[in-house]
Image 1 (cartoon, helix red, strand yellow):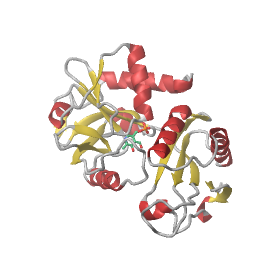
Image 2 (tube, helix red, strand yellow):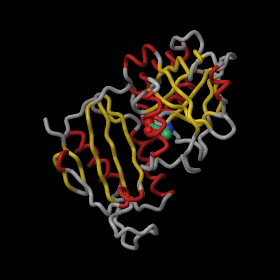
Image 3 (cartoon, rainbow, N blue to C red):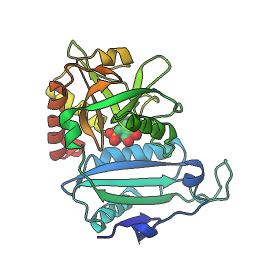
Length: 287
Ligand code: PLP
């Protein structure tokens, strides 16, 4: 089956889909994006993703390309044409096409690209065995809350992880505290049984999965606090895990050369993973 991409109002065979070389996304990474999981024909927390997309656009002054109802219709059409029942949809919006100049063009027209593909969210092997993470300095800018397509530090970190045989790189700020992974949020469970993740400031992307997991934690009545934690605290923690649209809740069993807990996925992380699956099946935040 050939894949179909949506590019500025047209549905095009994926292999032929392209953007203009003067697209500001291509030239300046002047754009934002979203990745939404699809499970059993339903987008997971579509509402939260669209809200974050609107916020990202607003924060950098890119005009919404169409009303939300039209956007939702295109998203569904992209999913339908690609016959994706379980997988992901990718949505990218850039400021427009214009002769190269750093300042915004006066007549910018937001460019929209969407693709969808089949995928199994959360690699079952990694979920069962637990993931290894390495730590790297956080080299990013001061607005990590914006889901920008400028991902150079993130891809460099992820590549470093791959080369080290790890699943993810946890980025560390100048104070020695973990901000987040390169494409995931970072969590620990302390010896006292408290679930900890960094607060959603400009230092991290407020993950939609993070928000779902917080909801699940509240419902389950676990102790939870949003605060920074250091690499040392993470290594000494009882458990660690990471969350994202494509990883769901994935236990972390090793940080650099330190084994977390007993080196096996922690019970609380596993329970949260199960609860999160239930949350997804029940329709997420929209339920
Ligand atoms: N942090 C970063 C830097 C990310 O890029 C992502 C997702 O791509 C996340 C966290 C997790 O966000 P979400 O749960 O919305 O996928």
